[in-house]
Image (cartoon, rainbow, N blue to C red; front, side, top):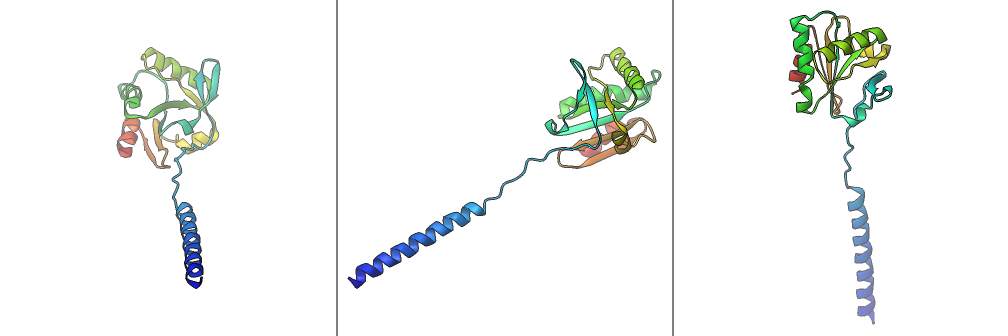
Length: 164
């Protein structure tokens, strides 16, 4: 009888210990969060019905680019043509302006160059974030939170090169 009681007690203690261990194992599992990109300010992109809010959380990498859409200067044309190629690298190019009339002029310039990108309209917070003191200006934003900035002619390509 003592032997049976001893075996039963030992079995109960071992079972309880295993259950605690299983709970501890479940608690120790690490869950990794999926990185979500955030861009300060608001950004509205052309949609089928005018402008709509840009959802940066849907993208792994976004290249913001602002320029003065005046004339066909070879250096700025190279930048604009480069914007049309970054999708191949998994980067979403977002040409952006901060005034409605300038946005329309920039969109006309892209259309004339047959670059299939819509020009977004940004607010003052985005303008400050992008840093438009020296144009053209580019910022490559990754969903990891990293940013790569460049300004002047060739800015878009330099920002992308820095991020790779």
